[in-house]
Length: 257
Ligand code: ZN
Image (cartoon, rainbow, N blue to C red):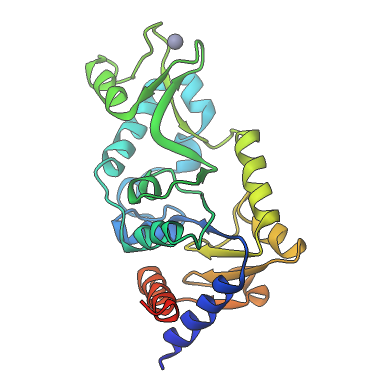
């Protein structure tokens, strides 16, 4: 048995024993879909900009034209990306009744597109944009149409106000109800799969701690180290797709299928 298969078998065992398993995912799970992690070395869209500066709520309020010049490009790079086999593996686990929910930092819609139903997007999603004045919401395709139609490249509500992506921008708080839901899930889980996240950024840095504090276990499937490595019952650090497919194989073997 390879080291990968041994770890996958151990994780499969923990999943079988657990009552409630949840997954917590970060940028690493979308890298195989061609979406670079902007916290890693600067590539593509992020090469010449500081995301902390331009994807900031203050820029949106002060200079929507500049904000949307950047965010429109961001939408463009994200809107045709497809879920990869790691996203599909999590959807498969949920269908098999072995995964209660996915909490993600990602805004790229890929978990939902892969078929995950119980999905908590703590940093929001590009799927919609909203008018902060009258609260109207618009789907991504409509936002793109309105952006293209505006001379300044700013998608606008019927009331004329610039739309804001339903994404938590730098300088913004997370939605309290979304965060509360994630925290309830973390506290109630007896196993959390931490996938593709360095577990360093709030709030995901706190969620594994909540699971551990409530007596649950964590498994970490991430390249590179995390602050939680010494607390992990299973640690897989290879390719996220390979790791999850090995896990599925281990579960299928155990279920005799
Ligand atoms: Zn409006």
